[in-house]
Image 1: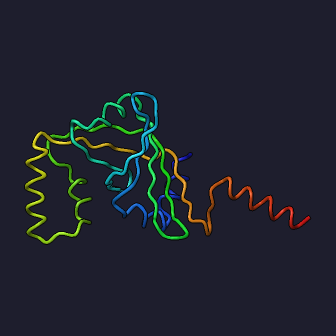
Image 2 (image 1 turned 120 degrees about the vertical axis):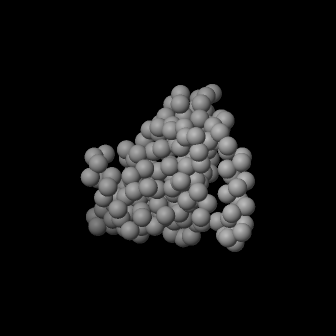
Image 3 (image 1 turned 120 degrees about the horizontal axis):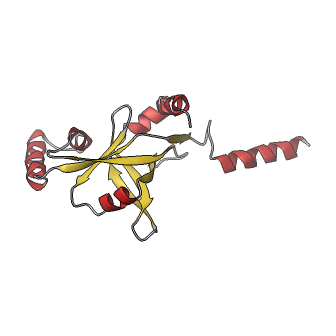
Amino acid sequence: MRQHEIDEVLNHPLSQELLARDIARLAFVAQDGTPRNIPVGFCWNGAELVVCTSKNARKLAMLAANPAVAFTIDTEGFPPKILSVRGNVELDPVDDIPEEYLQVAKTMSMTPEQRAEWEVNVRSLYSDGMVRIVLRPAWVKLTDFETTLPDNVAELVQRQAAAQGA
């Protein structure tokens, strides 16, 4: 996809709503060649999806070996709203707690006291820092089942309309 096409999809109001969520699914290829699909907390910074993890996370070796990923953000209601994103990730080790990690946690329901305690615990647990898994979208698709459909369903709708018109 061209960058202007990606930007058009990502700037759509529904995409912006989905990008404001905090949980998505990250799919990648494991070292044994089988697919993995895991829930992750994420942050959208306006240009990149960022997932933060510990430096000893097993997925890091898999992503280093094969950085191609698929990222899905969706809703639970009907009709579902789905933002699909694909591209290659970059791994960015940092020596502190990334701001994106703290930002994702802001959606958790905590009192100010609980939040302060949580942050102390996070800083203690990840004292050697974290890794930012950064995805700059190379391909995107927004599906809302009202104005946009999966390609295969759109094809069936066209076939049905053509058959009814014949």
